[in-house]
Amino acid sequence: MMNRNGSRLLGSILMASLLLTACGPQDEGGGGALPTSVPAIATPQPAASAEPSPAADPSPVALSGLTGLPVTETPLPRPLAVMINNAPPARPQSGISRADILYEVLAEGGITRLVAIYQSQSGIGKIGPVRSIRPYLIDIGESYGGITVHAGGSPAAYAILQSGKKNDMDEIGRAGAYFWRDKDRKAPHNLYTSEEKLRKGAEKLGYAGAVNVPDYTFTDPDYVPVGGVPAAGFNVHFLLKSYAVDYKYDAASRTYARWVNGKPHLDREDGTPVAAANVIVMGADHTVLDSAGRLSVNLELGGEALLFQRGQVIRGRWARKAGDIVRFVQDGKEAAMYPGITHILIVPNTPSFDSHVSISVS
Image 1 (cartoon, rainbow, N blue to C red):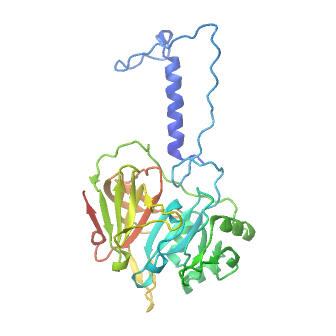
Image 2 (cartoon, rainbow, N blue to C red):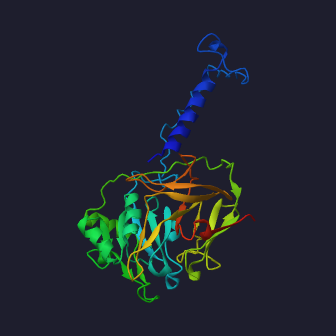
Image 3 (cartoon, one colour):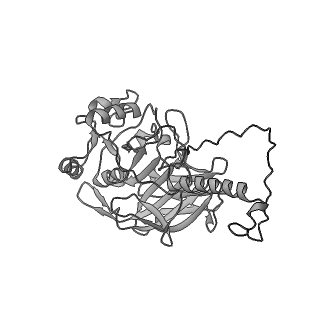
C-alpha cells in the first residue's frame, strides 16, 4: 500500500530523470528554454560499443499508511485494535513497542487505558495484558478499520457491540481460545494474546476480510521542521500521580521515548523502549456518566492539540470527519507525520487543556 507522499516522491524522481536525459543542446528550439538560474547540463553520450544499461526496477516500494515505513507484505492485513491494561500491576506491558499507533485515554477512576493498533508488523509473540472495552475505545479502534480485541466491557460497550454486530474478539466470549493467562502475574493483569493467534481467530470468525483503512500524510524523514518551538521533553498529567507520563527526545533515533512514573517505559518482552516519531496530545470533553465513574469522551468535536516531532512542538487543533481517524491540523491543513510510530494522548479539557501538559526546552 503506497501512501500519497510515497506516490508523489516516486513521481518526482521519475520526472527528474526524464528532465536530465532530455536537456541537451538539441532541446534549444523544442519545448521552451530552461530557467536562466538553472544551467543546462549536457548529457554524455555512451560509446557505440557500450552495453545497454539495465532498466530500472519500476516497482514502487510499498509503504504502510499508518507508519509511512516500508512493508514487505501486501496487501496488509486488517488492523487489530487491542485494549491494553495500563494499571501499575500490568506494567511493563508486552508488544506495545511494536504497535503502529498507540493511544492513551482515561477510563473510570482516573486510570488510563492503552489502545494499540497493529497492522504493519507481524510475528508479535506476546501482546497484553488485555483488558476491557468502553464505547469510546470501540470508536478509536474502528476508526482504523480495526477488529476490537478485549476482555469484557462496560454495559454500554456491550450494548454497542451486540446491537451493531461488531467484529470483536472477546476473551470471555467466543474468542477465548485465542488468549492465555500468564502464571507470573495475578489476574486480572495477566491476560495475553499474540498477533498469530489473533490472525487465526479473525480468519475463523470471518473478520479477516479487506476493509478501508485511512492513512496519514507523511513527510521526508530528513526534512527539518520549521516554525516549531524547541521541546526536548514534556510531561502529560491525566488525573492520578501513578499515571505520570513523560516523553524525552532522542536525537539519535529521532523519536520521543516514553517514561512512566520517572522510569523508562520498556517493552516487557525484549526491553525495547516504547517510543514514537510523532506524539499528539489532544484535549477532549470528558463527561462522568454514573456512580462507577464511567466516562463519555467526545472524539468528534475537535479541539486544542500539540504535535511533538524532531525535538519541536507545534500548536494546532485535532479534527475528525465522519468515518475518519483523528488528525492534527494547523491553519486548516493536515500536518504531515514523520515515518514511524505515532502516539496519541487524550486529556480532559478541564480545568484547561494546557494544565495537563508541561513542556521542557532542554
